[in-house]
Figure 1 (cartoon, helix red, strand yellow):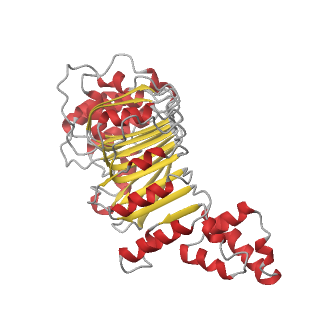
Figure 2 (tube, one colour; figure 1 turned 90 degrees about the vertical axis):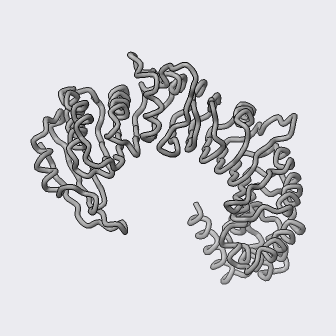
Figure 3 (cartoon, one colour; figure 1 turned 45 degrees about the vertical axis):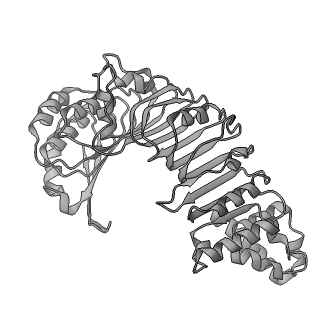
Length: 442
């Protein structure tokens, strides 16, 4: 999109140079907004010299983005703050998008927020420099036209009587501190919310998702319990528990699987990590898989340790419980050469012919060639009758055997699919391909 906007700007300026500045002045307002919006601040201000009509065009700019490039123009923060004040004081008309990045926590932000509260802001981004937690001012909660909100390194405490953001569609929070009840209320009072990303926010005892229109959710953080209580439209979910240890839940033990997948019938893509599997398996695996797994097409499991047989068991259960699974990505977590427990668990699975009836593509990352990883591949190959592609990669220094050795061994595996193309990629530590080998096995 940005490339297209720059092309419009360049084309317009070329026409202006041959036809005169009146050509620009006669452009529709929406085109002028696009031109001004895609220019860096200094260039936007310079348009005032084009003609008398353009002298104050830049003060109507509807997108104000004070990003890293803006700050690099100044030696000190005080200079940058002075320019922001000047821009806001002379600005005319609505400000639909406002972004403030990499700024220190200071009273100046409160003043700017007060000004913006009268400008019908629809998209607002505030990223404070790490280490400077900023108390979000009460003016933020008066932005009734807000459709997109992104906050980083902030303390989020709405005033009493806050009725939510009725038009909010996207919410992105990172390193934000608040009470768990505040998040629950914020979600419930944002009826149009479709996109929610929560990264490294406050640790929760219980994170309950109740959002009728939510379609995308990413949660990277710590919580004792997570439940999708009511998410009928949710299509893509990413959940990663930070750290190698889960927060301890001392409540009576019951299976986390049905609690986690309580109600999200539209789920198509699921992206989880090894610690999420540890959470899911607590309380045991249910005899009947949750119905939320019935429509999953794409499944990603990252940082999966084959050292823990419970995690392996949970992964196998999850993979084989998605009847419409087509695309599977696995990333192994380095565990050394302790292999026997995982091998003993996976070996019987190699006879599960046709368990993954629709699986077409498998991507395996951080594959070293250890016996337990080879046993996992044996399970996949024996269970997928329509499998077409298997892609395997790792950094060269972590491989325990050559690509040729792995290919020769996999040739002997029982395969449910008649034709599978294997791609092995070795990458050096700088991300350059050192070796790539493609093999068709028929």
